[in-house]
Length: 322
Length: 256
Image (cartoon, rainbow over all chains, first blue to last red; front, side):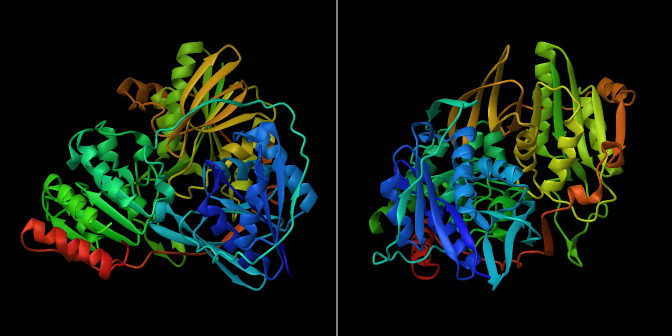
C-alpha cells in the first residue's frame, strides 16, 4: 500500500539542514511509492519550500506565523498538529535533532502513536519497514518496526544518504494558516556557544581531546586543527570532568553519540563509555603517548606520540593541501 | 513543593554488551541509576531543600529496581514508588508513559524531573510524552533551573547552544549533563534509606489492563556491531608519520 509520509523540515540560520534531506530519502523508502509531503514551520520560510522538492518531496506545506520564529514546544506542536490534521499522513519523519527529540514525543502522545527514534537505517521491503537504531549508545543495535497506528520516526543526522539534488523536479508549495494560542513556554535568549558553527552531531569531521590535552588552553591547539578541517571539537568525559571544556562537547555514552566520516582522538585513552559514543565513526585516527591505550584498538590509523607535537604538525600539513 | 522524579535503572556505562538469542545478556551485569536520572534526583533534592516539601522517586520496572530506588532514597529522596510491570511481555515508551500518566492522575505535583535520555535505549521519549498526557509544560535537556513562586527560568542545551526559556509551574523538565554534580549517598543516608517508605504497586492497582498499555513498536532483532579490525600504527619520525597520515586519509581512507 502506498503511504503518505510527512517530513518536518528544519532550517538553521535561514538554511535547510542536511538531516532534512536525509529525512526525505527515508520518507521515500517508507512511502512505498506513495507521496512525500514536506512541512516547514517558521515566520517566513516559504522560499525554502522548493528546495525540499528538489531533494525528493512531492509537495510542501508551509506554516508561517510570527510565533514560530523560534522553536517552542507549544508553538511547534500546535502548528504541526494542524498540518497533520490537514494531511492525515500514515507516517511522520523528522531529524533526531534538538527539535525532533523535543517535538516527536509530544506529537506521539497526542496521536497515541509509536516512535522509532534515532534511526540510522531504513530497510523497506514493500509495506514492511524495519528501522535500525543503536542501543547502549552504539555498543549494540536493534531492528524495530511499528505494530500499529501512525508511524513516527526520527533519523540520526549523517547516516541515511540524501537523494541527489534534482533542480528539474517541481511540485506545489502551499501555505497553511495556522492558529497558535498562548505559548506557555517562551524563549528569552539564545547564546551561541558553538564557535565554528559546526554541530557535533552533524559534523563530518571531529577533533576530540581527552585528559591528555591537559588544560582549556590545550584545546586551542585542537581548535586550530579543527578550523583548518572545517571540523567540530569534541571531548571525552575525562576532559569535561577536569574542566578543560564545556559538557556540551562531551562524546560518549553519557554525552553525544557521533558518527562522523573522520574522528581524530587526541590524548584520549578510550574508556568503554567513550568508545560507545564514537566507535561507529567511519575512520578513526588516534594520537596518544601511551602505545597501550585502548583507543588504538578501535583506530584505523594511530600515531604514538605527544599530541602537542603531532597536532600542530598535522594542522600545518593539512593547511598545505586544503 | 511536591516534587517527583521518574527514574530508570540501566546497565553501568562501563559494562560491555553481550547478546545471546537476540536478547541482551544481563547475568551478573552491574546496574546503576541511569546517569541522567541522577542529575534529576540531585536537582529534586536541592529544590526540596530550598523550598521545602517532598521528593518522590518513581520507576516502572521489575522488583530488582528496588536497589536503585534505595540508592535514590539514600541520596536524600523521601519516598519511592515501584510500579511493577513484570507481567508485560513487550513494552515501549508508549507503555511506560501511559502507566506513569495513570499513576500521576490523582497526584498533586509542582515539579516532575526526569533524565533527558536513558543510556540504554536512549529514546528520550517518556518524559515529554508524560508531560503531554498530563497537559503540563515540558522543557527538555535543561542545564539550569530557577524557580521563583510560580515562575520558572530555565537554561537548556540546544545542540551546544544555551537557550534561556521561561515557563510556569507545574512543569516537567528533563536533565542534561552539567545541571549539577550528583552527590554520593552518605553512610547515614544509606542507613536512613532502609526505613524510608518504598511502595510497590502493579497495573491492577492503577486499573490498567495489558491492552491499555500495549506497545506500539516491536523489536525484532538485536545484534552487536562487527568487530573492528586492528588499525595501522604508523612508524618512523613524527613529522614523517604526520605526512604519511595525511596521505593515507586522502588516498586510502578518502575522507579528506
